[in-house]
Amino acid sequence: MLFQVGGQGTRPTFFEMAAAQQLPSSLRAALTYSLGVFALRRPFVHKILDYEDEFFALLMLVLETHSLRTTDASFAESLYGLRRRGVKIRLKKSNVLADSGDEIQHAGLQKRQKVLSVVFLVVLPYLRSKLQSIYNKEREATLQASLWGESDERFDSDFVGGGDNTFGSRDNLDNEASARARWIKRLRKTVGACYPWLHAGNEGLSFSYQLLYLLDATGFYSLGLHALGIHVCRATGQELMDTSSRISKIRSRERERLRGSPWLKALQGGLLSCVYAVLDYAQTGLIAAVFFFKMMEWWYQSAEERMSAPTVYPPPPPPPPPKVAKEGIPLPPDKTVCPLCLQKRTNPSVMAVSGFVFCYTCIFKYANQYKRCPVTLMPATVDQIRRLFHDV
Image (tube, rainbow, N blue to C red):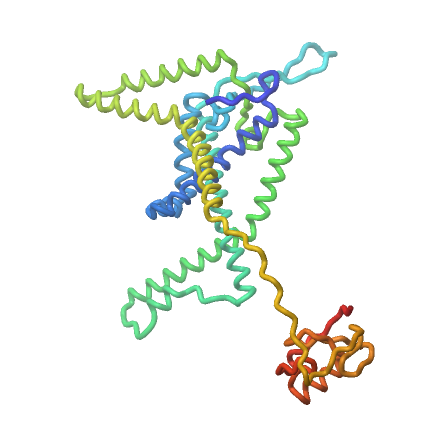
């Protein structure tokens, strides 16, 4: 599978580099979501989710190592037809009066550059993810401590050391556990204090390199590529053909190295063929599986939403208005007049049991004395009087 984005020359566009950089994180999010859905019906999948960082790092280690070995590009870069090239800068001088310049020459990746590329592509993101996890836990613990106070963190040592202990080995275990707990706590506090600055510095450098690359002021898209002395270039058609032939030569040499009896060679050759097939179709398979799963998830989710959509019923009619009692106080024709004092209402208040509005002082005295509504004669107390801040 190969994606090509518009542009001229061997220098990739900013959008190609950004897409290649964001692909691993998008792939991880899709795989994590997929495993989370499968874990709902297969509980054993939760064991993989418990070690999500390690699982994804191991997967990317296999993919990145294979991709760098065969195509001189990372897993994501090979999808966009990009290749990594070592940079050799030579000083170019024509004469004394002429301006001097730098001549950039590209060469194949050395073994050291491939190994360091794996470190920058797999190991550093894994460490960053673990530091982010430790920082989040420390921030949550700090927030809980600020709200509820510091909790006792020595449950294990208190449990082991509770009661009368006459064995010296148990005391040693308590001391080792407490020392380890203090060391872990100190490490978490250090990460919590330093990680925001490290993250801000890393993001600032990444933004600076990306901005300079967008402005065509540098040929390095990131600090890691600059440190390794690597340029990312577009692969030509001849390079793609050479890559295919090189892969065939590497695999033929690996098959020639097989030793043992004929049946053992056949078994090893079959295993190598299976491994090669998995690695060859890993890129296409992963991307296609993620797209297929998201499409099926959207399809079934929309179907379930249509089936489980609640039936919308019309709202019920309002209750009938309360009736005026025969022995109750009659209502005045003017709705702005209080039925008790027959004056224009001041500080209007409503009796909650009936809904009729009176002056606050009038209805308070009446309800406090008679314990009922003056119009409907329904039982009421002063606690059921509600002030109105907008009258008719």
